[in-house]
Image (cartoon, rainbow, N blue to C red; front, top):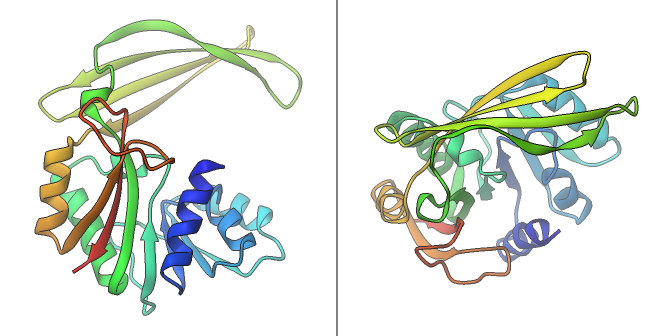
Length: 223
């Protein structure tokens, strides 16, 4: 709820239509829409968008399938944001540049761009063998054990996480890669590509960022 409130306050500070890139199933898009913000959500996954539309029935929110690196719209938004550490899914310099180009193009003059990312200095990036991460009860009432590994590619600044889910009678594996960008590099990247960094926080309570913070929450404005 703190995260929703953070982005809601930002949206209200810059009235107009808001775009969430990499919106997934609308976990943040929908609460902002319910709060009266005119929302558009874009995601590359048609399956996630189908569920988002189901959850948003009756709301005036638009969901569109698209890649944040190449998304095109005639609309210009007062605010654009990514959350859920989605910025880390852009794994190369070119991916990050293409994302920022999309954002800059679709923002109104002096519009707000906000996102969060894990801070490499405040994160355990050590390689780890399979360890227990916890468990959950699935929709059928089965207890599912969750374990995983992590392996960090320091040359590319990419963490590779492998998650295993064990039902006892079956076991599934999923993989995710996330790029870690340090605060100095992030600040330089944003400045070079048309943004003024107004604030960087450590958490949703707006604690000022410090080198040991686990997150970097950036609030920028289009120059």
